[in-house]
Length: 215
Image 1: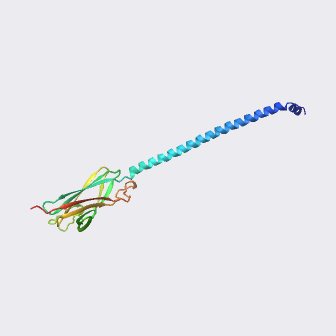
Image 2: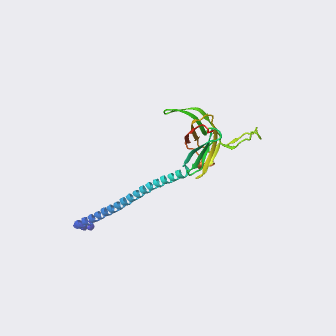
Image 3: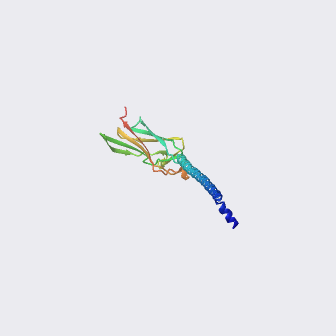
């Protein structure tokens, strides 16, 4: 009983002590809660920044991979020379590989086409068509009349390399001729990183006028 009596006699002081402890507990809770909120905010911000940086890095790596693995680039030019001993053309197709992987070209019959054309305003029509071959060896009709000439149906151009393909075609009449070179991708190299699987087509063309031979 004496304890409760003393407490009652000094309850004002006791209330002050309890109020002080209450405020101390609240202050500690506020400090701890604020510190935890600040820590959580910084952690989330760091995680968000890290995620953004990771996404950016992955995108840059993908771009680099595409530049290394998937770049097909070439320049193709057509040069022609008229024959002097007969009516006809020498056609030189020059290919330069400007890309970052080897390129393979289909050079089978029809890769080069020569059209004799007639023009009427902006309309163009063909009257003859020639399909010259790319030969690796030509038969001797006197020494080996039964032999066959050999043609090259595929050609590869390495990175940074340049290759010239030569064709010849005899013509029966002078006039305007349209020359085209067309080749589709060909997967001749081993390894997925070297295969030409993209839906692309290499194409080049040129017009030339053939006049009569000078006597």
